[in-house]
Image (cartoon, rainbow, N blue to C red; front, top):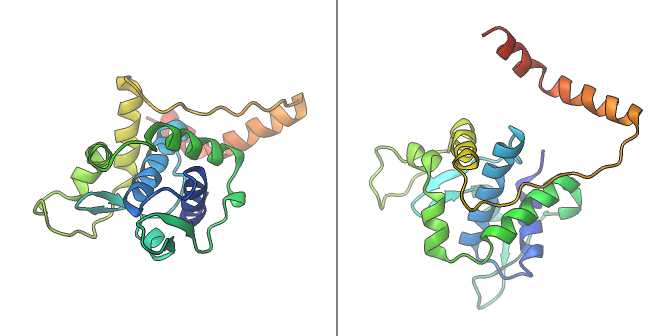
Length: 188
């Protein structure tokens, strides 16, 4: 599982240091949501809070370096994109490619989905909030987007040439990862 600091650092790198804190938070949220929809698992174990303008991974803000006289984040203290897997790199790159040039208002509107609304339930519109978004609801939200169709980020694929032994070993790992889910489905 990826560290949010590494995710943030890779986004800064992909954007060439041209990403403000708001966009950085939204891109991290979308990366988490789409990773959930595409794999059934979170990209990071970081929590996202339901702030006024959308979901925010709060620990990322404390480590963001901002250029003097600018709102642009130039790096993430302790963030190292080389620690991300190839698939994590591909997910984040797909998200940045799809959402990276969208403006503040568009990103805010898109991030105010089911998981954000659920976490803000009962909180006045302009009030601050430290309520965490539910990972389960994020999975539901982004999975619905996949099934509803429309213009979406491209789900990455891993094109690995595996020999038979490597493929069998990989399938055993997948089966082990999903054992509890398979058991739950089998006993329904």
